[in-house]
Amino acid sequence: QVQLVESGGGLVQAGGSLRLSCAASGSHFSINDMGWYRQAPGKQRELVASITSGGITYYIDSVKDRFTISRDNAKNTVYLQMNSLKPEDTAVYYCTALMYTSTWWRGWGQGTQVTVSS
Image (cartoon, rainbow, N blue to C red):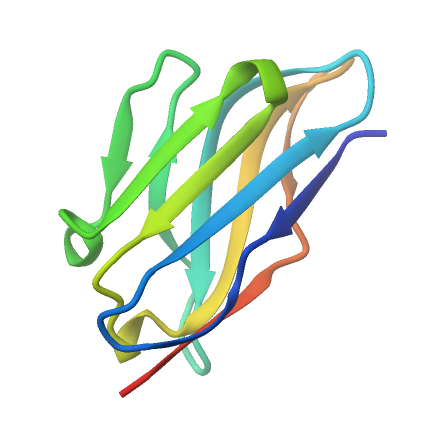
C-alpha cells in the first residue's frame, strides 16, 4: 500500500514563509505528476501547483512568483515553498500524486493546515 504523508503546515504571519513536504512511502510503485491542492472554508478544493516527473511546473495565477513547487524523485517527495504568504492563502493543503502500482491511480495526503494571520 502506498501512502502520501505531509508535513510542514502551521501558523504564520502575513509576509512569512512555510515549506510543505509530502513523501510517498510503500513498495513497488512509480509516480508521474505530483501536486498540491488547497481548500479554504466554504470554498471548493483548487489546484495550487503541479509538477511532472520531468520537472514541468504549473501554478495558479494567485501564487505565481510566491510559491515554488519542486520534487526529489529519488525520495519520492514533493515540496511547496510558500513565500510572501497572505491571509487568503489560509486553507488545508493536500498533496496528490498520480501513481502506478498494478494500475494508475491518484493518491491524496491527509491534509495539512496553513493559517496566515494578518
